Length: 457
Image (cartoon, rainbow, N blue to C red; front, side, top):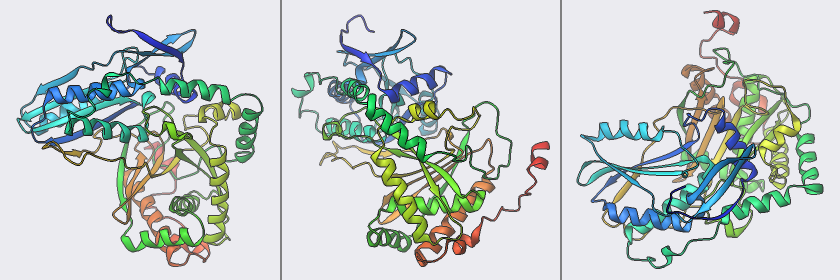
């Protein structure tokens, strides 16, 4: 803690934070849980205006001035009154140098005892720069980043508005969430949640049987890459239409397609897919930066003799049941079930996400600046596969992220092509049998099925 700052409140971590604290502590020098946002800025970025804007955001978001320190074998969070965040301003020779430095800064580990946010400006021209904002995941989620940048860019565009309000420290809203969560998750309510999930996952496969190109490393590796994916407008419209007709959602329709594709490629009739949820259950939390999000382990039963509609309805029932019982933190679920120890992620190894974070208002004026968010240049993959989509301009777009420790790019592209084929076939005949979707299985791209031969090379 800075000598000039005071502790205003302290208390336990949230249960989701606690799990992340444990995981991050296994490799404290890793930057795996960093959440960087690198924006290319065009226009004259006034550093004093930026500094005041950052101060205003930190003032209004208590989690950004919260220290996390070890205590009694665990950790506690301490909310301080420190609102001044150092802005690291550097002059570089060109954009290539800025990009390299941005990747380096994004990969520096955090000392959470000093705070969870860093801000840098890398400038190679008076009106060209990178704005690099890095948070630790223990203080944010996807929803949080939308909140943060809405506030930050608004303050930069209109530096004279709300100046008086920004001097008043906001209450420790996230700490209050942590206390409220711990109070709720006990007794009969906790037993009900645990009972639901234990029943939902009873006898589910511990690991999906997708074909691997390399033996899974004994120790966790997070090397990854991505295959870009996009569904054309007509297919996207049909997905939306099917969801409306069946009183469903595009998320459930797309998850059903993903589960069928995974089942056909693995031979598993049961597929467990991790799906992130916002977990902001109170309207008062909508504008708060903090780590609220969690993951549901959704079991999808895929009967090879069923129709697409029948599989969809089974998936829908699982999604609705899971959403009703979403309060149980994933870490608590893992401890309750205690699956066999493995180098694979527990309970599920594939994830599906359809990003639907509400777009928050941006300032009407831009202060003479334009921002372009750049792709994360750090190739990582926490899961074997992650299909991440968003709906934009009438289409579903995104990427299939894959672990390069177990899959080649050729394999990932073949898996992506199979999923695309399932989607196209399903929307063409949504009442038809799933055996007819995607030709019933993935082209292995010319790979040998004898994995022992691959592993021995």
